[in-house]
Length: 355
Image (spheres, helix red, strand yellow):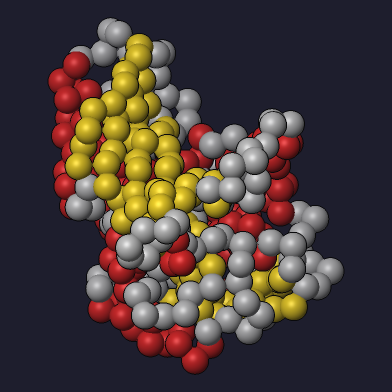
């Protein structure tokens, strides 16, 4: 299959990296063990820290002001490129970093560039990366305030972002209510398509859909949630849908997924069946194995569940009688692949179940 995307395949950013996008993340169970050894904070204004593997930190800004209490949201995210075009890479990396603020129900305010760049590489490439990032920061309604850069063997780019949210409206990743429906706002399969691209087996349509998905801000899905009784929210990134579903279930619930309802990039199914997969997908499979039995599912569907999503969609828990209306609003706002993909169930022997 030809790609027609020479700028994405020719020598350049991809040739300088061994991994890319959110697939470069350290596995979640390894991170949990490391973080467990750190001293905790006794500051009661830190409303969300690293103890629940949530998407961002939340710190109460004011408690007794004249208006509603507000909190600041802090997050940072960066990674190596998954495409060769530097401006496209910048847009994707910035979109991904900004997403954590929307996953907490907030609004981005200020972003700082985080840059690692090879000393011998053409600085025009870096300028294009930063231009792409600045475009998405502007679309997010935030401002670029500066950043930090270092020389490194491989290029990496992302943002540190500060956002704001009404304290009463902070969304957590692990507080779903039993009986709520689960919505996913973007299609799965981005990691698989990028794996196919690296070996020049991805066709134009698949690459175009993957790029459009990765560059799509979760701002519009977040804004669509206004007025709905959302009980939990997270964004689906490098740990794949299934591991993020585990995090959403937390210690009190389980999630019943509807495999046939999962939005997907169509060609990703074929690529998965050709074993065009990622190492991160296998790490996610290993992480989820004790908590979900996927053996009855087709192999390609299993891989979609474990596939690391760079700049993936929001995973939203909302009352069953509101789910259709919220899904319709999210679609009307531009996320046409949004779908109800499951429900929150009582705790069971397995944390992720399938219907």
